[in-house]
Amino acid sequence: MHAIGDRANREVLNIYEAAFQEHPDKKNLRWRIEHAQHIDQRTSTFGLLGVIASMQGIHCTSDAPYVIARLGSKRAEEGVMFGRS
Image (cartoon, rainbow, N blue to C red; front, side):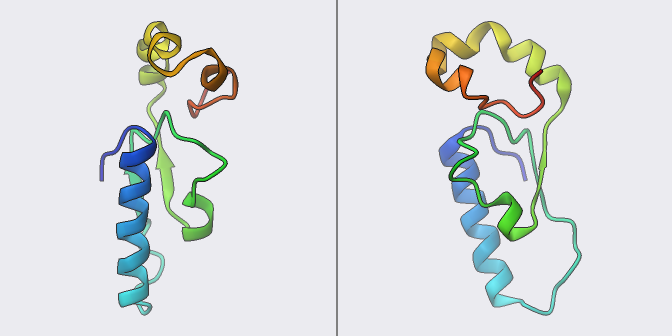
């Protein structure tokens, strides 16, 4: 699955959680969300659900010029991008 942003990631995680509850026998399938970036890590359920948050480093650098303008300096400072240094 591909999702960027708080809402997109939250919606995909909710879909995954519902699928996991419907099919508890399906284990170790390595569910993931590609481009999982620009999310609020404090409210994320990636770890609880065992979903892999996949982010390509190149997107971290290519998005850098736009982060503050689009997300604000507070969110940028809090580290909303996975893989930041």
